[in-house]
Image (cartoon, rainbow, N blue to C red; front, side, top):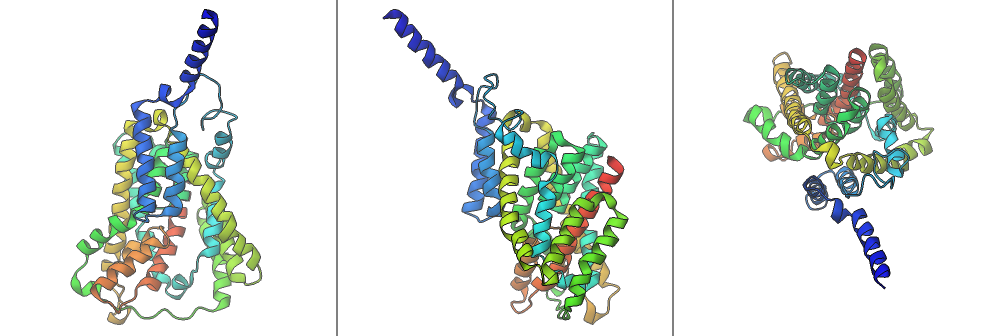
Length: 386
């Protein structure tokens, strides 16, 4: 009887050693709380739920404590585990181009084609990327790490993942979560900056209605866009190539099934896999470091610089434009590539000061330009830092 009780006791002790309760650390608790905050913001505040729910739940998955020495092969960093296999789409950099394919298939570039000068706003907003890059260098990060951190300023999660997978794989979890967090916080971060940098006259500027864009122009744009951007920055080909290919599928009018697949089921599946695996990569032992704190701070700073650069650029640009061609500075925030959230913020803030002034279609010009701009910036950084 004694041997039987001892056997049962040993079994129970072994079982306990495998449970999450026995292996939990304060770091796990912190990360689980962060995951719950992400889910709360998505469900209650509706901050980018398509992103924050997969990432938040992924954080919960990645921070279930377990015995690392047991050889269970359930952790995302354990070779051969299911999560590790799915995570290879992130580390190898093939999820982001597929996301860009879907973005291209759902993006209408008409606002940009009808008013090409709006592309300059998207270019100006990329100052956030290079500003954060220089500050990260000053704080002691290696050049490749600084480049990966700087891309957060573009407010483009897939681009941040693609670049960090090449330049700083060890920081990818913090960079990806930071980029997606600031994308979700666009409605919180941008409006105060926009109000601070504009005056009452500027906020009510009425822009000329965009001209009608022909079908031929829409078909030619992705072809010319691909050739111009990728001849200039060949290293951006995986992202830019898929972006413009997806747009050609949409605008050609003869590949509707392919376009619908790219902007529907395909991008939905990849978004789920990308969000969950990025979230799961934030294991407490890998994620809770001083570098992660610095990355979050630099990410916020670069996003503020990007928004500020876009608004101030419009104000300066207006000095050289005739009165009838002036641009409302409230669309300057849309130069970041958080599509279409930044453009919506331009509309919302604009309506506060003139309920009849609709800025959404104008803001979509710099917004889609920001998508191209962040991919070009990533290609530039990749070109001279690899």
